[in-house]
Length: 305
Image (cartoon, rainbow, N blue to C red; front, side):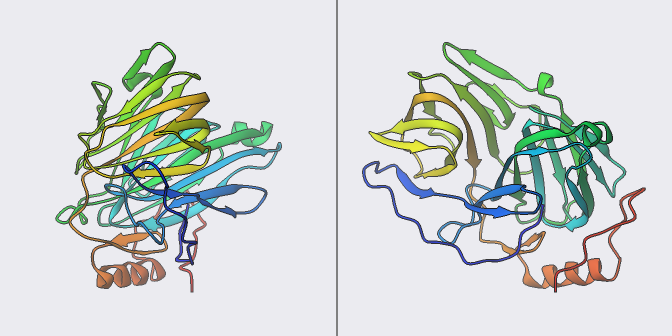
């Protein structure tokens, strides 16, 4: 999935919870065939939460038989992508030769570093039969000194990630540490990402030890300090405060964040870098065909003009 700069609505600040810095209502885009994306980051008021610099909520969408997702090969630099599904399946192929069917609950971390190209398509069997799709895609900006590391891909099935369950809630630790458990995923800077599902009446803490923290409400409704927040909201919190999340009805949400990077990043299309000159180089590299090709792919997304 790709991003290009656009104007951002400036949204209201929260009124009563001093620990809550910003509430972002994602803007919705239709990418075609009814495939909707809600984009929470980057935002005019906030570029990153920890190293999370891009946050898309896509679906739910129902593909009829014979139709599917077809994101042709495209490039990335200076970031790592996380594709996380609740429903459906995506076939990932990249220029390092990795081929992986991404399924619900699995962690898939593609580190672009100095440059990678990949495609994202509906697997053949699901294209034949049709499928429902719902998920999230995030970009993790790489820290200074690691922006040009070698590209790589990590996959962990849902069964291999730690899960913490207690009365009325379940948390899957996708990356980093939460609820006393740690994901096996290797990271180049400290960040965390956790899927939490909870029943009405449950109260949960948001770990105060992480420098920057946010909650994205995928579906359901929660209450924090007497204020209610419904689905498709990104709640960004100030550092250090103890946060208690009260669940008002069955809810799925993502806890995310990590250490702040040392400075802002330039973003253009699929490129992220601390250097504008590096982005200009990446533009020319893609336009001139200098990125490695994705094996057995014969299409590509041209550089936007």
